[in-house]
Length: 269
Image 1 (cartoon, rainbow, N blue to C red):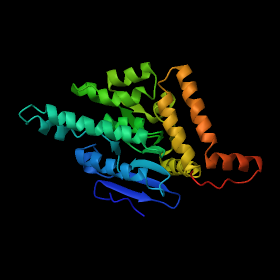
Image 2 (spheres, rainbow, N blue to C red):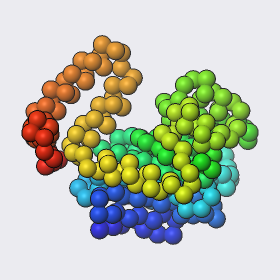
Image 3 (tube, rainbow, N blue to C red):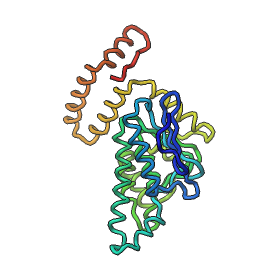
């Protein structure tokens, strides 16, 4: 079963393990997050939320560039409007912000598979995903400062993944960093040999796909909600989540299976 989005710039496919792969496929435009590309990704992600066959989402790309970020030619054309582009720029940034938040708020785990260059909003896309794996040849940057446009919205996602000093170094210099450094500072989970990337990502996705979808949904939402709370509030919130989780059918089944030393039969409830 395929999601309805499947065209020249975005390919989609669901495998037998419920792993839903989105492949950015607009190489001649460096897989830029144009309005059309963002709309396509948004529709695919929205449809994945309530699709029970989908358990994990992978975002990947064709070609040497994962994504170069916003389509600067589109943005430049917006300057021709009477307001010099103000309303158009607002629309594009709102569309991008909604997309990134959709990834975070999606109850299904979302994994970035990066085999190439990820810059600006492309780097933001990687940072917004729950997990990220990259080939050793992949590189990352928030280079807006080099063209007079500070990467303010990519900053939101990047700064929630890595420390202030590393975030500011990327944002202030605009320099490309290697996949090894990206792993070291926490922007990605792991850098692997180019030939091993798809295997690494699929292994992680398959492992996650075997878990209770209900448990993953509860856990992902709780993670992002508690992370900005005070320590006391976070523990109060997480304790209540644990109580509600304990009352779920899959928690009863999972604990019973562990005690009885058998494989659990998840009902995703």
